[in-house]
Image (cartoon, rainbow, N blue to C red):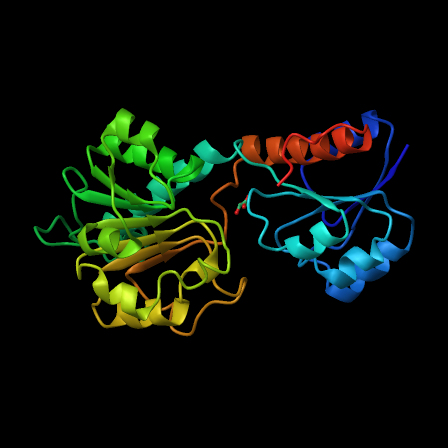
Amino acid sequence: MANIYVTRKIPEAGISLLKEAGHDVDISDKDGVLTKEELIKALKEKEYDAVLCLLTDKIDTEIYEAAGNAKIFANYAVGYGNLDMDEAKKRGITVTNTPGVLTDTVSEYAMALILAVVKRIPEGDKFTKELRYDGWAPELLLGSDLKGKTLGVLGAGRIGSSVAIRAKRGFEMNIVYYDIKPNKILEGEIEAEYKDSVDEVLKIADVVTIHVPLLDSTRHLINKERLAMMKPTAYLINTSRGPVVDEKALVEALNNGIIHGAGLDVFEDEPNLAHGLPELTNAVITPHIASATRETRGKMSEIAATNIIDFLDGKEPPNKV
Ligand code: DGY
């Protein structure tokens, strides 16, 4: 039997798996994210063998230190930019994530954000609910078509590829993409066209969708200069990690007509928003819910638990990063 600490309430499926495997599970009872001090205090209360943490927990040296015995941190997310990976490596700590299971969910959501901003759905909803609709009009809330337009995908891994396939097969868009290496399967399946650089994609895409992990090399990948390369009619969609986009520069670009619109599910300094962002009618913004379906959040909980159970059984956890 091992002691496991879970930093916030998550769907029960994974907790049941941990308990069925005979482990003792303590779950933070705070209705929200633990502060660093609270997390350190909680981790020092027992000798924990494993920690199940969330993308909202910043896991650094002091946290690893406080959880001295824990040799696995299982992140309840596919992204793991919240953990200091160099420090984990130095300490021989295994980090796991929850890939695969949220690919369809997040790519459906990316398509939903594209449609929401391009077809101006939140604006139409607000307008109608404010009882301002006084009859059909030829130029009321004009949006754009997707058919025949170019989708630029930055990062053609699981999620990026899945969005590309949906956009091609469901909406007859042309796909161009950039990744550090070409994705031949994607090219074969949907004739996606590889571009040599991010800039090449930005210059020709009508909609740009971001699916890169947050790394030192991708922080502010989209900055003022790169926004200026986009078409003034283009839209930017981000369901990856907020700091990949310079949010202040994006607000300026949206205000000044440098690009036409944006759909964002992630922000640079969550839960805070850049000054001016909430007021923009040409930005659709949602609270990091791209993976938030009952099905997927339940499966993420099971996967995080399985990673811990396998590790504690002396096996290689399925999703070691
Ligand atoms: C992830 O898993 O990284 C997602 O951002 C969570 O929604």
